[in-house]
Length: 312
Length: 61
Image 1 (cartoon, one colour):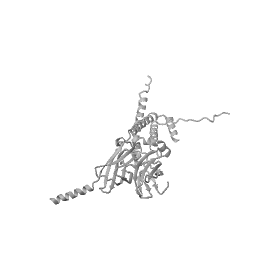
Image 2: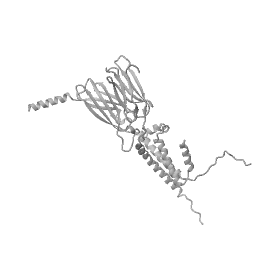
Image 3: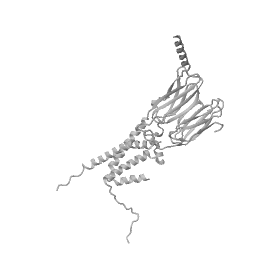
Image 4: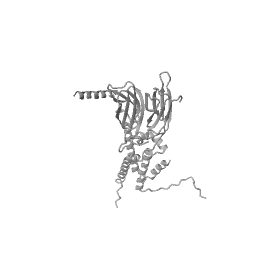
């Protein structure tokens, strides 16, 4: 019996020594108010419990995009179900904060791995649901109603109105130092490596931002992390427009930060044919319904108003 | 000698059967919707880019 107690004590002690902190992810503003492509969210990982390390913590952070829906596509079907971000870095202490824009609606998966001396590794996954922008749903409803009205107009006006048809057809015919940053060939649909090379292995503090030049919107930002000797981060440029990657590297507290900037041309890809076909079919339903309604209205207006034949 | 107005434009009425007009009008409307929302032709795509993104389900990339 004493032997069992001793073994249990030893096992418990080992578990205690290898304990890892539980991590909590907070999103500001709250995730249920963040809208895709519109809002920049600030995400913070905080340790819970007493096992948090005080020294350097090595992180691996990945963000996976929501899987494709069964019927309805998003505006970026090429990126659905793929990775958005895959980065590794170090921090002093257990807290990490970064900012990002979520490109599409759906359930994201944020995976975090961290290692530090004196504690067990942490491997956590945080699902995060991002809802569609209600304004977009309103615009979608309005556009479907517009398509219905277009169909209605065409169904009503078409028979015997060759001039109207002809007019429409006619109108239709018409840096310095040794630090450097390299960004791989960017293409929508795949992660792009962003390689940061630092001249020394000492802890230089790095800030990194990715900006879409079209509207100046910041899509990703992380600051005050260290990447001894450099690192290769992966980011999914989800929009086929020019972007810029900006890195600011600060060595110590005396020297001004070194800024590196790289313009990135992102190769756009056409959406998959099947996605286009399904979405087009969704728009054809109200068009056809409107067209039938237009024909029906036309028939109602013409047939009952026929003049009665003169008496013989 | 008879004077002729050479600038006159000859017009000719073409009767379209009801069913054909209906089908053509439907095809025309379908083509307009396709071009506006799904065409990858750069001039149309760039013009309609923001509209497509604002409709939640229309694929753009």
